[in-house]
Length: 271
Image (tube, rainbow, N blue to C red; front, side, top):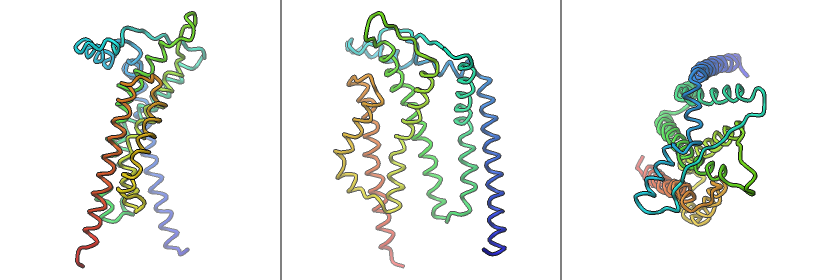
């Protein structure tokens, strides 16, 4: 390795160090700010645990105006317990870290992209921005879907479920928070299906015909995933989870097909 290459390597490493330092600093500031808004933060976090939550009220309104009384959520109030001395404080820190990461994520993306951008060609740079924007929007959409639909109804069902009348549910703080954060992350990742398929198509590893060929397999797989992450098992909740993911799969077919058509037209253009 030449002296120039060694110098270039250490220059890039120094730039990366500065980028990581700015990212960690921004994350720390966001986490500290989130830590200070404890009432608002945990008010949002525990909103699905009361029958005044917007999703429950929306379903109650639908039942009242359609006559589908079997879907009426009714009233309920969850009971929470904490059995570890420092659990509430540690949960506060954990949630503040996650909230801080979410708040400053646009800045983090810009910083990381700024580090990678010099190594990209102009064509790659033009494609990078839409991918980042759409990927972020789809992830947020998946998280919101979990917060307003999947987790509330799954939690409500499991909170009311009893194997024996004398056994009452008291949900631990760590169980509630961990499940909410885990399901939010899972749904955010699942909503990245179109982006992943587009990148695979761009790399020449996926064709629209392949997605069409395995459509039935995908439907079964999506239904299984939906059943796993929605333990309520009722048809309405399963449909609310399965339908958006399936539509994202269909959107992937269109995106991959358009990409392939565009690539073919570019390849056939005269030099």
